[in-house]
Length: 231
View 1 (tube, rainbow, N blue to C red):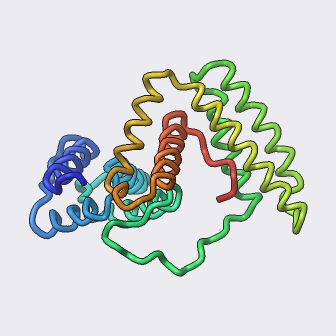
View 2: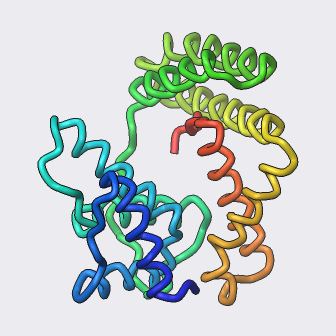
């Protein structure tokens, strides 16, 4: 597990960059708050993404009036951490109980609309021609599925969801191939570091599965590939 002081310094440095050089020290009660994230095993990358997400909303409201404080970012950080834990199959180190509340099910048409929009942006990216062509083909396939998704029920909806799972696997394979050997190795190392705080109490198979899931998430982030499957 990362030392609390080192963890807080990394958060402090990242937030300083987001605040355009304005440094707000993480001390006192705030130090205890942020140290708690380290104790739970919140990866720094997840904390950074939570800060990014809060700042994006904050900046969208208009001219910035004051520097962002880390306390304001906690809800986003912990929400992303919950998503990450579910994705890679680990539990919080602090022993917090999983919420018994059922997850909100996204509507299939709305999910397809968002995925198509994000994939369309990738078609115009600076990635390789082969990758962009694969993305373009996926967009066309999803457009076809979207036409029937609104009225799909029962077996018809199940069939669409299954196609999304298969397409997601194909695109993730293409994303891995798009990255160079060095970048893949670096992301694998980062995935292992993310899981390291939890590894001691995981069976070998579960640990490897968690590392693979963390690696896949990092690959998605690297190429900006959305989840095509309906989570």
